[in-house]
Length: 440
Ligand code: GLC
Image (cartoon, rainbow, N blue to C red):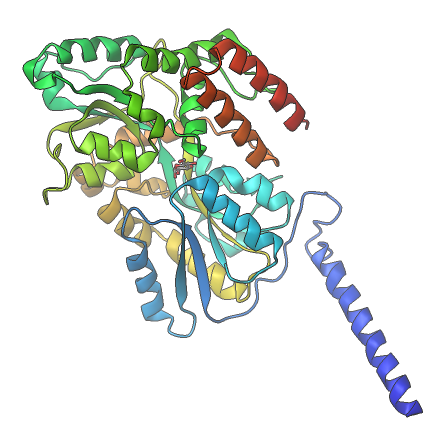
């Protein structure tokens, strides 16, 4: 009995001592990253076996094919798709819930590029040593930047996204317009000309994504940036109470007022707006590259196959500025089998997989070389404007409280677009709100 007690105590001591060792290494003792307060969670990427991939709804229809390719060669380390909702905010919510519950249900997270700071600072995702990602240098630089927090890597960019202007080439040609619009004024003028044609009767002029969700933050940011404004200035401080931001927002509010943007667009996310364009209801559409393959489909699902073109976004005084979109794959801190997870991520990041993906889906790759591939350029003439769009794209605010920041932007923009709050008032309220959220 006596022996047993002291034995138990000794065992308890050993357990405490070893958990202190674990704690010390979890705090970054091993990689010298301790003490930066930056949420570093670099640890060994260990453990092999089955994993899961938590991803927003796969509107491309090709993700499972990519996973099948991995599963075929990794029968003991298969990846299972956990499909989350279509809209980015709902995906984020589920991932945050999973992280705060420290659940191991999600191994690899398909993260919107805007979430990195928040997830890294909260230690919801694992820091990835750069030497574990051999091809990092081959990826477009702005995409790699999205996966970093305080100069450390927390994800690997798998798809990028730049906003594009889809336009009805057939209708512009019929109206005698040879080039797609470069400015908002050109765009409005083109709409007027086309609406005077019999074929242009009843067609909406322009739509983007204006429902109250992440896509509205994207569209609002593009309008502000394309009028020369910035949501967060170069000094890191909010900067939305400016004439430039007002010009950008008013371009959208006026669009709704005049009817150039159809009323229904206030309910549009990516898919609703894509369908409207594909059904022949819009002359111009702002959307991401994935739309190209769907709109070009010749199986009867698209009414505009062979009739549309793609150009850079227009702006106030010249070409506009896209928001940088896309997705990075990260490893959930609470996941098991992290050695398998990093191998799987590298597999998905490989040039071969990315090429296979763009061929099927027209999603933007992150490998720089693919933008210069002659075969791909022939199949996807949007690649040149896309590369330019990504190269000059403006990231959305890189902040730890991103969830709150985007909610504030969405609220302000939505209230202005639905004529609840005058644009100037909405921007000055937003400025105050952002000042309380962005303090670093
Ligand atoms: C796309 C982009 C992403 C963006 C989202 C908004 O998925 O890749 O960055 O936040 O659209 O709806």
